[in-house]
Length: 302
Length: 271
Image (cartoon, rainbow over the protein chains, first blue to last red):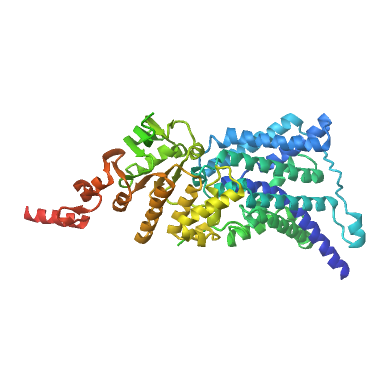
């Protein structure tokens, strides 16, 4: 009995920590959704692009780890800059649907650029953190939990706190929330939309890089990262598209639920249900709570 | 140059097109003297909002363009500026329909108006206190989410937010739309006070002809994109045409649409 409970705990904690990896990807989506009310389909490509560049800097140019990370982050700021100038600004008066389509196109451009620059083979990314159980925890708590999962959890927590403080207490955060509510009114009182867009896309780029590092270390830096990022979709539906805490909680729920279902219910379906179980959960949310757990309620005065 | 010292805003014969085909303004000229309140009156679709947006350069975001004429604001020719540059020059527009940031608190809304200014936390608090002296009602509700405040309060938020940018000139687009008469009076009192104590020049677009003229120095009446009539507020209030068309008062006394229809049907029967 005690063993079963321990096993359940292990599945749960492993799932929760794996969920923070989804949260990291979902964060990038939330940032852009807040500012431009658009689902950024190129977020997956940004993850792939950024981490491949990071690997490329380290492996092809022998640039040290920290410097390569800074360079890759800087590259994502440049990508944000180009996106604002070449894609968003010309589409300033276009509908949200048009911008959505543009992000799909942007995704293909980034995927193509990344592969043209760094090649198509799968790269190994070694962060110096192994994807194996931490001995101390295994000895003392009898739980087998991956060091990479714990790191991802910590990194996610730090980024959430950082972004929360940025939005709540800084001037640019206030500007961003104002733009998210009503871009026209924000511009009428002198909040420069292009600065806000630039900030948001750059921040989303850096978040993509961090998420890419975590995923890349686990699954290898490869094209599949683009599709993996779409796992963030059910996370966002559950958490709410415009909420940073929602992205985190949504990620945790997806991570935990898919692992528990996989272990306990999976065998009845012949296994591998973690691929689609999150989407089923998302459908229930769409039916009964479409704004998600933490999404901003659509406020209507009557 | 001497003209600029008198008029903070000088619009000369502007024509505005939307989407390169829809002619919204044919020929609008108007002046706002420094420190005065000027009313821009007219019915729906007459071109009031378009005129204000041409001045604040908000037109560009609606695919509109000034195709003829010139706008001179405080010695600057307005051509390629964007709205945030205009705010930097001291010109702020309060958009039609209040447009508060619904998810932000009342106070965050007001502070966001100071975005274009480089102020320390202490300066912002000081400015905030000053603004609250004009909008006492908002101080009580400073922590509420703006979306849950009343229409009148939202209009006050919009004006207070604009005032945080420390404007030399305010463009108010139908500030009393949809408000109860008591609130209309309250809003106008605040506008008048801001004009007198802060020395802000005001260009006010309104459909509420009577109260707008009573609180202005000068008025322009536009119809289908053209200035039809202009004059001091007093002269417009006493003008027979204005009385009949915009104030609903004819020489015979009050007149409304139903009376006109009655008269017509009577005339038909006689014929």
